[in-house]
Length: 339
Ligand code: NDP
Image (cartoon, rainbow, N blue to C red; front, top):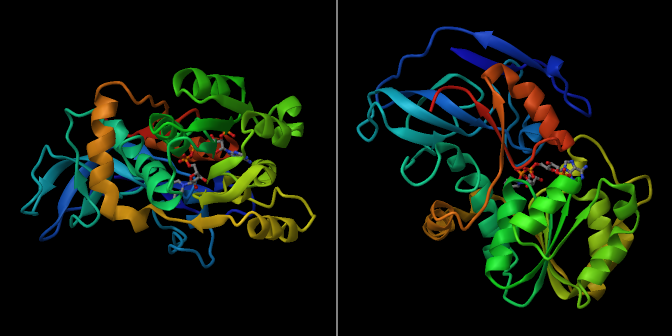
């Protein structure tokens, strides 16, 4: 067994030194458990929060503990009545070559539906997040204007496409010309602005205003920081903000020294905004509906998705740090074992 452990807690940006590679014997499945080998490991922004020791919606990874993460695995031995060797499962077996599970939080994957890696991306937790945020949380409707930040990413790319499919005007914000071109040309957004280019970043609010003359009805918020500051003044009366994430704040404050609370708070009041944070785990009731609707669209090639793949478990820390920097293009994965 090879696993990546949390060696120390980062201060600000994580570094390689915060992780260690550990080896040991492959575990035996106990009664009611199965053993699986990891094929794909998902890297996700929330993992930054698990590295910190502080109150959050989930317990931190203990020092020396295996980094948490979603996985696609093949069952190789089983004492569990519902799982047999050869089954492909999506679960949370962590940053490790093998894992043992009693089936809690595990779902079997149909290998004929789409490539296995999609169970961690467009047809997995991030896709479910986009679906839940847009439908259940923001209650987005045809004819409205939607802004999606981190628009080329795992969550954002499906939010953009679902918004277009339901007849919305969709504006993306993404880092770099290549990501922006993908968001408009491949995903179908009406516009996309590059928040990392000086020229577009300096007047992001004005550009959004031009692309959304009637205001922004729904903001699918993934990043906070400068993008949030540019969207808030453009929100329409009775607009909704679904707070999915705030990646620009995960490794330190990027909103400057000025206290932003008073004007943001005032905007919520005068525009009668509905601002709602959400966790995908609160929306398990619509997971089956999400898979029924989006699965066939992916299979038919009607929903596009992109992946960035790091090779081998040992590459996970560097790939994770790169994800936080925005170097990934689409869903960040680690290929741990053969398909
Ligand atoms: P992505 O695939 O979108 O990758 C993260 C992207 O964030 C980067 O590629 C980068 O894109 C962008 N980014 C990084 N730093 C900054 C910054 N300082 N300012 C603006 N953008 C930045 O990740 P996911 O799709 O997996 O996740 C997107 C968001 O959704 C995250 O905030 C995540 O925490 C959240 N999330 C929340 C869930 C929930 O249940 N609430 C579930 C899943 C995800 P770019 O180059 O375009 O800047």
